[in-house]
Structures are given as structure tokens and as C-alpha cells.
Amino acid sequence: MDSSFTMEVDVDKWKVSSEGELENWQFHFSEFEENLEKPYLEEIRGTKITVTDLNPEVKETFKIERDIADLLEELQREHIYSIDKGLRITLNGKRLKAQELTLLVSEEIKPAIWEGSNGNVMVTIIAGISEEEKGIYGGWYIFCNKRLVLGPDHGKVTGWGVKSPTRIPEYHPQYYRFRGYVFLEAKDPRDLPWNTSKTNMDLDSPVYRAVFQQMITAMRPVMDFLNYHHREKQDFEKEIINQKPLDKALKTTKLMQLNEVIIQRQVLSQDKFSFPEPAKRSEQKPRMVKVRFNITEKEYELVQEYFGKDDASEIGREIFDYFLVREIDNQ
Image 1 (cartoon, rainbow, N blue to C red):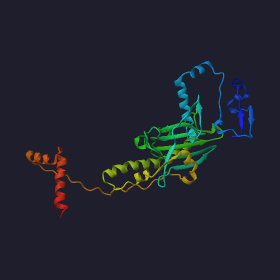
Image 2: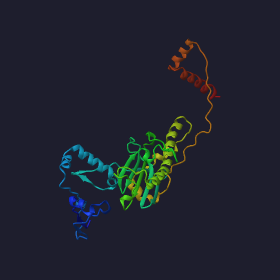
Image 3: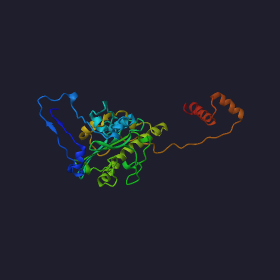
Image 4: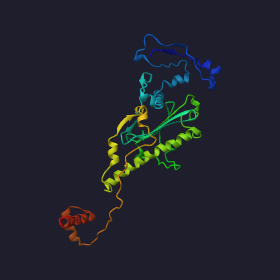
């Protein structure tokens, strides 16, 4: 707010200098001021990047609307967390937007939050549920130094469909609510477990292998909840249970921004996703008996006309219920 800087880099000169080596990417301010008497107004704060002397083929690229749209989408995707947190980025005067990163939270349903370190990499893993939507936002999101590298991912790289050491199902509509967020932070980007193009994770990295196992551990209880919730609906319809505690708890949750969850992680912090105890199913289903008898076609047509039904099994059930109500229940 009360400082400014200018950094000018002549790329052609930099490429042939010693600072062009990968081991020494250091740039220096051309101008720098701080502790200014008048802080910059909020509407003019920020960082502006200007690139000049572009190669002719690059200049042509910026004339193609589709290429500009692709660049905008890429920036929105990679900086989704920072934009969701409040960072404003504009490209050719157009402000970037990003989907909201959210979790459902209540007293009964809370996400798993795990923090630790592996060598020089700080790790934060958050796993829980959010709104169902259409499934396009479900899955794992992996950030390296706040930049989205992978996600939303539904494949084996993030644990979907693995068989051991813990079984995780393939991604399908039952798991659309799942949200997993992984934050990997390192002072030296070379310590991060991403591939050389920084577009995916390095599956051979010992750091990522350790993170992967922790992701599976955090993920499994969320899968259990979503399985229980799915079965609860079916059991209730079949009258195997007479209450729906998971659905009731789900309806009391509130949508919380991921950034807010991170701020409150000391209050919410727990290694395991938590949810209420599912309703107990009846230990024994009632024994069913099939009742069969033959009648004449004329008799059937008379009864069929009375009940106004075409299905013989439904008519048989109506006849039985008629007798049960009038002769047994009224005794």
C-alpha cells in the first residue's frame, strides 16, 4: 500500500548471462520505494505486467480470439485458489473468474484436516463434501505454492479406483459431493513433487507417495459417509429403517468457503472426516409368504372390474388387504 517497484528484464541479455542458468533465477528491481507518505489508493494497487518485442508468431497468436480465450481459461484454472480468496486478475481488460471452492460444515459433519511436512515441503490436506451439482467439480484439487496443478481429478493419480492398501471406488455419481484439497508449499519450487512441465504430479517422488497415502486415509471416511447416505435412502423407502439421521444432518450443514475453513482449521481441525451414526437396519427382515390360488376367468373379470386394476398380483394383494383390515384388524 505504501511501496512500489519497477523491474525491467531484457530477456535477450538475460538468456546469455549467468543469471539465465536454472540455478540462479534472480532478478533485481530497477526502481524501489517504500514507506511513502501517501499510500496508494485501493483502486490503483496491484501489479502490471507488460511484455514488449514479442516474436512475430506470438503477436499473431494474440490476434486469435480462441487463443486468448484459452489463455484466460488457463489462468483462471491455475489461479483458482487465489482468485477465490480475493485476488483480482485482468487480461486485456477482462477480469478473471473462478469457481467457488467450498465445503459443507456443521456440528455433526466436519471435514478432515491434516497438516504436516515432508522434507522441505509443507502439506495441508482437507477432505469433505460440498454441494452435489453435476459432478464436474467433484474430486481432488492439488495446489503447489497456491497454483492449481491438478484438478478436479477423478483418476488413479489421486487415488480413485485403487485397490490397496485401502480400497477406493471409481468416481461415479454417488461421489459427486466429494471435495479434496491438497496444498503443497516450498520455498524452493524444485522441492515440490510436480513433473518437469508443472502440469501433473511426479508419481515417482517420495514426497508425493507419502502425500498420496495420507490422501487415501482422509478420503476413505468420506466415501463411507456417501455410501451410507445412499443406502439410507434405499432402506427408508423399503421400510428397513424409519429414520434418516444422515440426511437430516446433511440438511443442517452450511456452505463454507475453503479459505474460511483454512482460517478456522484450528477450531475444525481433526484428522478424520466426521458424521453421525447411521440408522441401524432391522436385524431380521420379516419372512415373506407367497399366496397363490386359481379362480375362473369370469370370477377374475368381476373382481378386476371392482378394483379397476389389470395386474393380477396387485388384485391379489388388494383382496388380502381387504380381508386383513375388515376381519383381523377389527377383532
